[in-house]
Image (cartoon, rainbow, N blue to C red; front, side):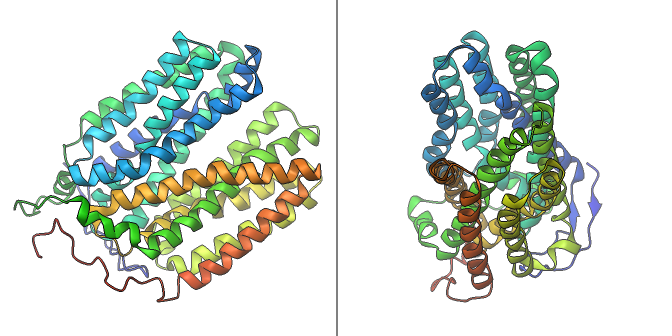
Length: 431
């Protein structure tokens, strides 16, 4: 396969750019990821509308929506452990990309509240596999490049979601939910073919990129080896920080802001355009944050700066009384929110050996799923009690301000450093 050289120096986070990147493998993996997320997002914007038209009650609609997140919260930590113990990514990835097709077939066969509940639960199982995708993709970049890899794969993630939302807006009114579900099936099947083309193990991914890798036998991980991961303070600290970012965005950008567009007299098309504007900016920022010029400033600069932008958004947004400024705020928030994830992942896993990264990612992504469920619930309750959105924005803004202060401290302190760092990788030959 063709390879190309990248001569980047060490980033401030301690990551070194690999000397060789197999761009064919990277692009293939990014295409798979985009198709994977497209298959799980193309029907989402109109799911509630479709179920309401079927006279499904609001409680059942809420249960359908919640089942997707609950499956991820429950499955991600044990899945991370099993993936690291097995030492092979491919079975999990193939399973993850084919499940959305099965879920959409359930929606087609059983277009009802019960059918969509089962389908969304299956989609949640498929989405839980996302933790394996991130670590699998990072293997293509070599040791210490998880921030760069996460930034790129989150860009592919955002592109798939954006394409799904766009197709949903274009085709639902004309062709209906069944057509969107068939698009989901098609994308899932294509992603499965791509997944099957990869080599079998995580280590083989590195070998595809670095043919000179040692062929010596590796020692298998045990559950005892993985237990210290659950005690790592840095992992928990930055995972909780990521909770706030994901929950804040879901509560404000994709909930309050879209409702306010309607309050300002905007059409359904404008509501869709608002979401698409945010997602485009998020996708671009993820891609840009993977570059060396961006990465060299590190988490010490970018995490506080991005959180300041979110604080500004939370306090300025309630003052906006027309649609154009609301779109401008989506650009601000989309760019900075899209940058946070890759740096929190890099900081959270800084002390974790690479053979244990899937376990760490299981914890990280589980907490993100908790944030996605809890923060919108709390902020929605505040808005409901107050009878307006402003108090909820301000409450979220103060929470974001606290996270900003913690980010300044957390990226500079040594108090998060492990007393006995997990510097020795149990699967390494150099023990």
